Length: 207
Image (tube, rainbow, N blue to C red; front, side, top):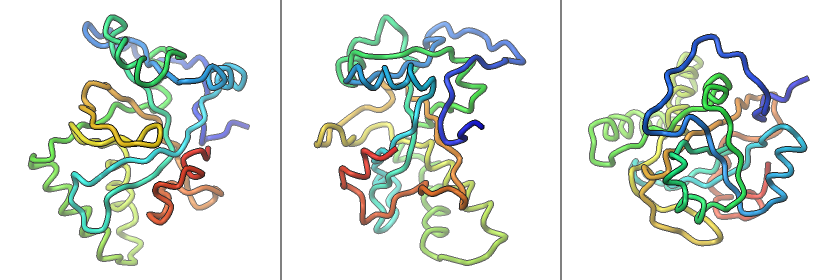
């Protein structure tokens, strides 16, 4: 039985041929700092999501600065421009067909301008849903939609927690794609880690 919380590295049937990109890579790359992580992927034939911290201060929602949730990150940077990305994330990597990734639900990030109307509108609606805590089954799908959008959003520029410190990054350079597992009440893990655990290295090593 397949585990729906991992992304299986297998051949996928593509019903429609996706036009090849002329600027981005037609491959989704994932890089890591240690060869053992690459060996795990090859041995398991699967990439297991891990918890990562994301700053959402750019949304300006009161008392909500960071969230931690599981994901697998990829990039589609053209091979000729990968050197800086490899230097930052690690020299060990794997490249997977982008058509396969699209079929498996991997999604490119929506980079948000903190000064834009879309950010203002999202903050207004998200803050309302977050702070009012209305127990209404009719709003569950609405709230799930907001959360799904949040997990695939990132500011154009911001801080990233890596190797025990925060780095200032221009995130658009990363051309990031994400796989986020579908987690429901039957699972023994949480999609969003409570704020009290943000910064806990034991949480970030969980997968």
